[in-house]
Image (tube, rainbow, N blue to C red):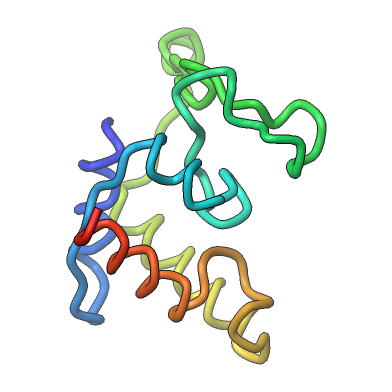
Amino acid sequence: MTWEELLYGIKAVTTTPSTFTWANADFLKANKVRPYFDMPLWWPPRNDYNDGTLPSGLDGGIGAFTIKGDKARAAGLTHRPLADIARDTLAWYRKEFADWPDGKRPGLTAAREKELLAALKTG
């Protein structure tokens, strides 16, 4: 499954209107977007992303989140439908982080996201 397929699958079970804007790793690096911290589950496609401000070992790299599950599926692993996983994860997130102020939750703040979108449009 590609990231695009994953995100559109998740979007299909949410009620919040949303759109996707794709930005490349060079733009994100230039704007000091931290992989995994600012963009959960995103990892840069090359090994030169760490500018010294990230914890050791967080340099990025091709295939960092590319995991083949062929052997596990052959041994009997099954997967729940993406819609079920997305709904359950969203319910958990809303419960777990409901009282966390903006800026303390995982991911970008709304203000930072708007700033990056504006920079992407003008860049």
